[in-house]
Length: 225
View 1: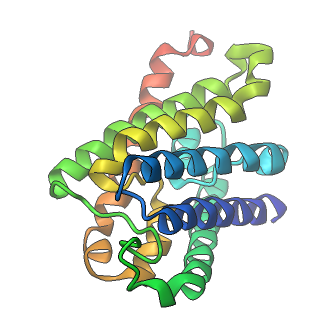
View 2 (view 1 turned 90 degrees about the vertical axis):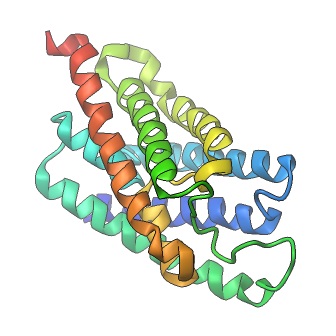
């Protein structure tokens, strides 16, 4: 149970700090807000990796959990429980964020009050973006945490966090960048509207991307020889 609770806490932190920064900076209104939001999500992952990594592995993302499961590194039970607690953590974070900044929704610099995702160029474009970006992100996670890398996997948290910054820099313009179903489910519930209508994109896209990353890693991982 402790590792499940660790995933809840980690996903809460990622969602609250990442989405909270997006809201506070009015992400998308200028280049600085995009860069700041990207850094916030990346640093949140780094912080949690070195906080709960030894307890749960710090997935804090159903797409990562699916990739790890398909790579044969965890059981089906743990996979399901990780995903459940990740979503719960994100919902709690979104509720807290909505409660804190909900009164500022009318502020012209705040586009949404929970940092919810939306497809700026349509759902097909958004789906492709989320699949590709998640595939790349989860591939970094699987590689950085693999025993193949020996001692270098001690720096996995840093590599993963920095890669998430890059992922956000690319994706924010198109989808707000999810690559994480839990991080999208929580805010969408409280944001409603377009975010809720398009939520399926941010669930299916990242999960497909995570599965593709697991497939690619199985092909290139030398441990599979």
